[in-house]
Length: 229
Image (cartoon, rainbow, N blue to C red):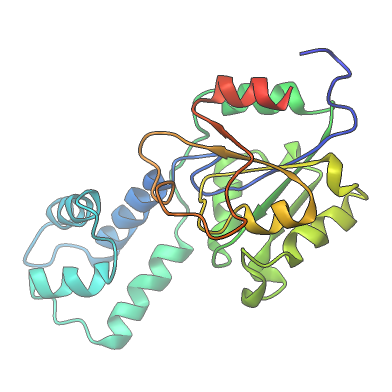
C-alpha cells in the first residue's frame, strides 16, 4: 500500500459484526445475565448454555422471556426489563476481529477514520471501550445520540459525520456487514461501500432493499485491505 495512497480518503466503519464479532457480544451478555440471576433451580452455566444453544439455532427473539419460561423463573414484565438493562449495561468481553487491528494500524495517520453505529446507549460506548480502539478514530457517531429515528438506513448520521470530518462524499468509504440497512444511505450520498462478509455474522444474509447493495464485497480482512488501498 503506497504511503500516500489514502491521504484523500475518509474511511468509516460500522461497529457491530464489522470491527468485532457480534456473537461474542451476545455470549458476553448471556454470561452477565446468568451471573445476575445467580443460582436458581438451574445453575448459571446451565442457563447460559441453554441461551447460547437457542441463539445458535437461530432463535434470539424474546430470549429472556423464553429463559424464564423454560427454567420456571416466574419473571414478570419488570423482571424481564431488568434483564434487558443488565444485558445492555454490562461491560462486554469482546475483541477485535483477527487482522482488524493490523488494518487500523495501517490506516491510522494515512487517512481520516470514523465509526457510525446504531444501537442502544450506553451499550455501544461500552463496546468501543472494551475494544480499546477509540484513539484510532477522528470521529465516532453513535446514532442513538442524535435520535433513534436517525438509525440506519437514515442518511442523517452519514451526513453528520461527513460534515464533522469536513469530507467530500466522493472521498468517503463505508464498511459494514448488514445489507438490509448499512449501504442505502451512503450509496445515495455518493460514498463507496464495502460489505465485509465473514462466517458467523448475524445479519449478513439479509436481503438488500432497492439501492442498498454494497459496491464491493470483501470475504476477508486481507481482501478488505486490498480494496481500500
